[in-house]
Length: 297
Image 1 (cartoon, one colour):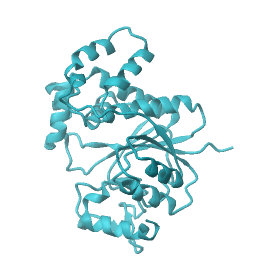
Image 2: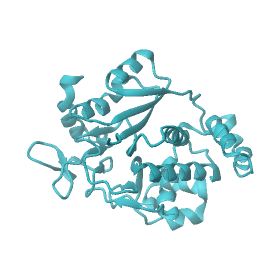
Image 3: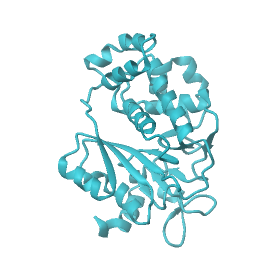
Image 4: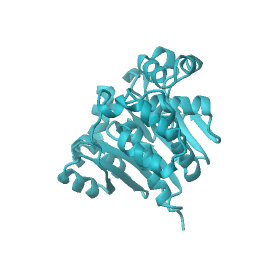
């Protein structure tokens, strides 16, 4: 019997309407996998709607701590605890208390993966609010290993003030300089088989615990780029932005995109791109895509 594929995502304090394109674009075709949503601060009516759209909703509590709060200011203490001989289970329990959501979600995914045993074959860990599916996200020849995705070639670490701030804060100037000319890999979409994704999530959590600072609450992107470029996980495939099954279109303009005769975005091989990330940053594209599911809203 074939093992199902599974999509893992997180929603915090968003109504169902804000993430409807994610689910409705997936429902356009016969997606046979499962969708697991980790939800915090989501109202009961929206939870029911997510379940109606086929999601398994896993509730967790996130208190919304931010950069300037007491937990962030005490990071040097937590970092010492994470570097100690404390049992891993105790470190994970502490991480649930002190990690911001952008870091904590990797811990949620790892625990789910380990608890699910060998139930699932392939995984997609993805953002939700700004992702649109043009095809089944697993409808491509996915080799074993971890699959991460580059942004546009012009998107270099050293040209992005956010990455300079994130990586410099977390790992210092030397690490930042070593990545200066690398094309950015987007942390918002990662595919993998069970073993490869487990290794990736464990490394992300370990890097978080080692970081010099977590005052940058949204910097899982910095961690991800340090991991894929310096840690170089085994069996890693880095896909170019216009040549794979995921396209991060945020930095692009509508004239940069290719379309097939039916109006779907294609890659340079003229294949429909299954997963479009940050589609909502291009108003013309957003209007075109939402028009495909408007009758479902």
